[in-house]
Length: 458
Ligand code: P61
View 1: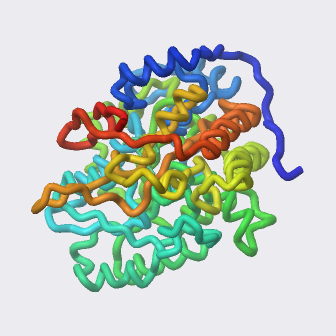
View 2: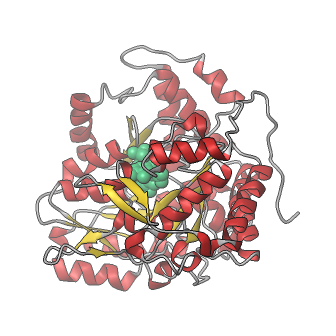
View 3: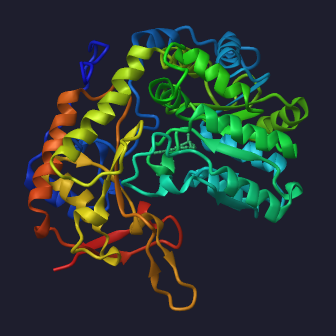
């Protein structure tokens, strides 16, 4: 079968509210045309993020009842630690309540002013945590990774020449760590190949620089390796993950993605001295080292989720569900980022709405129309979220791409939901000339997309 059906059946249902077009027009107007301001229970299909929105399995829910809420030494911590060690192979396992805390703890321990951190592309929380320590976050993804039409199978790969050039330019003493984000979220959920991981690891070793993964979507990355890279077709996802992590010294992880849970994360590493220092900091800001800001039951759910996410039938469905949505759109001429990534389909709003200039937010025009027409929530990743201001003229400098992300929660929506989403977008695409741009009425000084108020341009 080209698109496998859901490898689970539904035991509990959560009814969805279906609002009328008039209700949605009123809601979005009251929200200042900002999709973050819409109450979630007025949304029919919520594709804002795949983070923390997974459906847990019956096995995970059962695990919650085995939560041991002891302050120190909870049995769930040991299960969690053993599971992370088995899959990721790192010696020290430090729980945190989500991914950005793992980043903050790591960088607080190793970064100083003027340092440089290379990554394929830093996710926004990673970049913000690097810059908070007055260090510089630099992106070294291959050029193909920035071209929405290039069909390279591993568009998340690090450009080894760019990485070497950065180390030469700043000197290895100013590069305390090399990161690699799998899959590359900010580049469209694109995978990194095992070959590239080996090469990055070799560069790191040659210069004596520690190498860490941002491992949020590691299992999805492993599935792409199995599917696309020679020599991995007969390996299990666990074997691929174990090999991948064997080339690194540690990782940060938001378990809200491939941990299949609603909250949780961790930091894992081989270095005992770093782990000791970070644990002391953890105790100051998150909690004792056997819970790290989580309940015992949360740790149990993560341990079980990390095992479930390695199931190849699950991953085959997961990756193909995303592809199913992408291919339906592509077939009807809707411009998307290709190949389709692991966790989301990205619509190219610049080509979808060429008559709306970046300063009138074409991506946001599509986001608003998709909500009004179909009750679907997506998110703009374009000028509203990412534009910079020219310090001299005050004029907006748009980012390279104007995208709308349709992120798919894990095990939540069926393929019929995806068909509904595709039909809505295809319908809008047919009538695209009717869409109009937006102007900003209110904006905050930073991260304006979360709270901005907009008005339609007549
Ligand atoms: C997302 F709009 N991602 O994609 P935490 N690394 C990577 C991530 O994708 C990631 C984190 C670290 C989110 C949630 C999100 O402004 C935003 O557990 C590759 O969320 O702390 C999160 O993990 C951080 C969306 C986060 C945003 C911040 O939707």
